[in-house]
Amino acid sequence: MEGLPKEAIEQVAAYFQVLSEPTRLNLLNLLRGGERNVGDLAQACGFTAANVSRHLAILTQHGFVLREVRGTSAYYRIADESVYALCDLVCGNVARGLERSARGREAFARSMRRAHGAKR
Image (cartoon, rainbow, N blue to C red; front, side):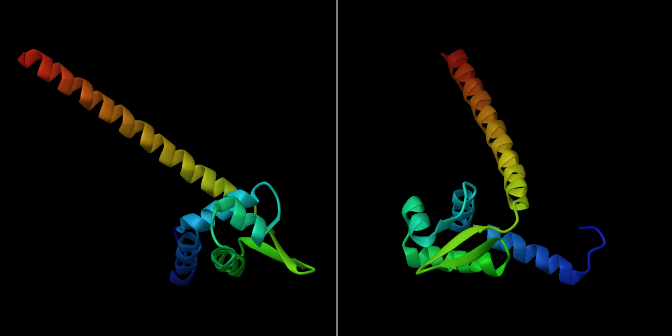
């Protein structure tokens, strides 16, 4: 981001804002397996078709997904697969943080057990 003008930084922030909604991340993850229509996506994620449509409209507007109408159904697919590389990078970072937290909690629990055992 070094050297980017303010307008570009704002566009980057808007990109991440779109990804900050768990429902949209869920939809992107479902579309990883290939194109699907609103009904399929709604059933797969347990949300209403109206809710899914609203989130898909935002994803389409920001260039994450492409929409194609066939008959009475609209099908959605990923527009740029690089979003998965970004999500995988972030997920890996989150997983490492959770592992560190779990190790820290376990070390704390061991020290508490030792401290309580020494007092007895």
